[in-house]
Structure formats: C-alpha cells, structure tokens
Length: 324
Image 1 (cartoon, helix red, strand yellow):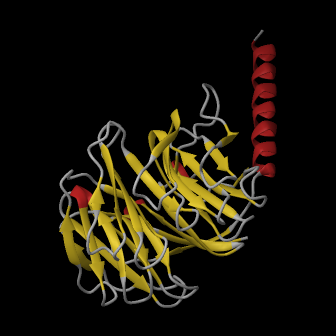
Image 2 (cartoon, helix red, strand yellow; image 1 turned 180 degrees about the vertical axis):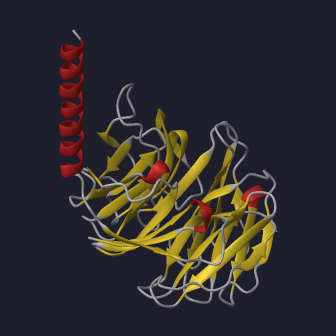
C-alpha cells in the first residue's frame, strides 16, 4: 500500500513537472538587466523622448514625488529630484527640457528646465492623476480616480495654461490616449469613454468591463486597453468599439493583473503587471504570449525603445532594461 502511494505521488510530481516544463517552454525568454537607481520609492511612470533621453517618476503617496533622468538609454540615472509633495503616477514630456507630470491629490506639474522645478496646479476634485496624454504641445487630457469609486478627467487646449475638469464621476479613471487630434479615449473602473471632439465631450462606449489600467493607440485607428483582472481589448475604429482578445481572469487559472501597456509600432507591444507579469504581441494586439518571469516585483509601466527592447519601472525603485 505504501509503495503504491509513493508511486502515485511520484507520477503526480512527474506530471506536474512536465506541465510546468511545457508552460515554460512556450514562454518568451528575454535578456533583462536590473539597473541601479538612487531611490527605493515605487516608480510608476516612464517616458522617453528619444532612444537616449528619458524620465522616470514615482514617490510615496502622501510625502513626496521624485523624478530621475537618463541620458544614455537607461543605463544610468540621475540623483532623485524632489519635484512635489505627493507621489507621481503619470508623465508626458515633449522634449528633454519640458513636460508634465500628474500626481496624487490632483497635482499637475509643468517643467521647462528638465524637471529641476515644476509649476504646480491642484484641481477641485482632489483625486490622484493616473493617466496623462498630449496629442501635441497644446492639447492634452488627464484621467484621475481613487480606487474603485470616484473619478474625473480634464482637458486643455492651450498647453496646460487652462484645464476644463469634468464633474465628479462614480468611476475611477486610470488611463488615456489619443488616436488622432479629435479621437481620444479614457479608461477606468468598468468603463471606457470616447471623445470625438478632442476631449471636450466623452461618451461611454463600454461598460461593466474590467478595471482598465493601461491604454495605447499604436496608430490613428488601432489601440489596446488592458485591465487589472486580465482582460485585453482591441479597437480598430479609433475607440468607438472594442473587441475582446483576452478574457478576464477565471477561477483556477493564472490571475493576471495588468498595470500598463506600450507599443513601438503597429505590430509590436508589451503589457506588464503585478508579480512580474509580462506579455508580448507581434501582430498588433490580436494575440499575446507570456514572457518567462524574471522578477516578482510589481511592474508598473513599460516603454518600448525599439520593436524588441525597452524599459520597465517597478515597485521599490526598480528599473529593468530588456531585449529579445
């Protein structure tokens, strides 16, 4: 009886090993490099203006926002500049000297000196600004929200001098991006919004969906949204309608929690998330393949620098460079 039990146990272990081996065999293996940074604060956003010059920002929710910079493609990073009293969650830079950041408690900051100083503004709804996107130097939209409840958005048409903020909504918003000058989408808790007039008015185009945490258009019609419960959506009509290409998490399956997505061109993109989650697409978001896990850290944001390489920022001040 004992021998039979041991044999069954051995067979079960061998089967599990084969399954895990098969799973790992199907995963993409990347070359990764962890880069030392001058901070242990969580890093939430990354923005490169070209292949060499980039900004990473984060901080602690209630105490400080920090910004670090690179001039060598992410191989080294400057000392952390204290740029605000609250954690930074979103960024958009136009050049190596000027750009915007969005932070906790509705702080929006503009810099014209590479992040040494920021002109700050606080908005009435007093919510964390989680997403920030500009179509050009004049037209931009931010998305804001707290946890699973309150949210708002705001639009500017004069380079951030003035913003028009929405009324308080029952949905938290986390991500925003432009398809073209007129078509822009905002994503958040259970909903996706679309505007056809540059952000002045939004309509709900999807409801009762995932908690959408990442959104990017790879050209003027095609875009991808990723959700905290593992869903991936694809649009080919500027965000007016969305098609599911990966379903929401199901019981007894891998629990994927996406936090960000980045495309280099119309075909090549990566999505990242909690517990080292990373997936790749090479067909414009139609299908996705898992990357073999190289860290257990929460990967907060990713930006591709080429079709096959990029930069990831994570909790605990972590920065990773990767290439295929």
